[in-house]
Image 1: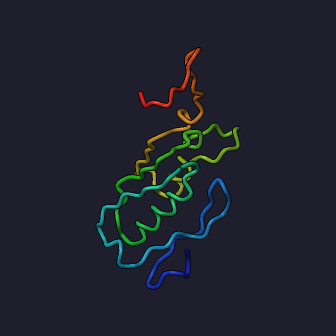
Image 2: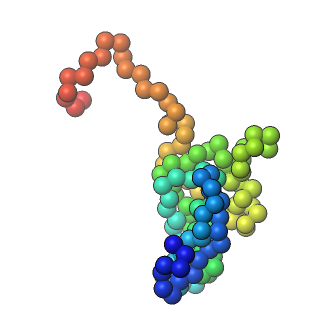
Image 3: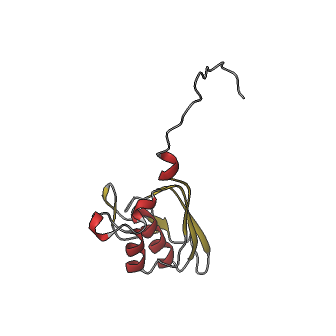
Length: 128
């Protein structure tokens, strides 16, 4: 959190799908010029947190190699303008981060699949 860590630098405030957030913070000596940095997050939707982290690394003259996320909500990558959804592509382009690849281990495609058990399935308590 901003103001809680000594000898640190913070990114600007940013927006997420949940609302406004204060900037991310890192100690000044943790990222050095030319350091290659992998940013890991649990979930990427609008890209607000990732863009803040990328900006922070760039402020310290590090290089973000890529962003890895456990879950990626692809509906925010480049939604149609009439949808009213924020566009992660536009945000990254506006901030000059379009060169940073983002990937997710799981997308909402998997999260919205409904499991179907075979007719007559009985759980016998054993692993199969």
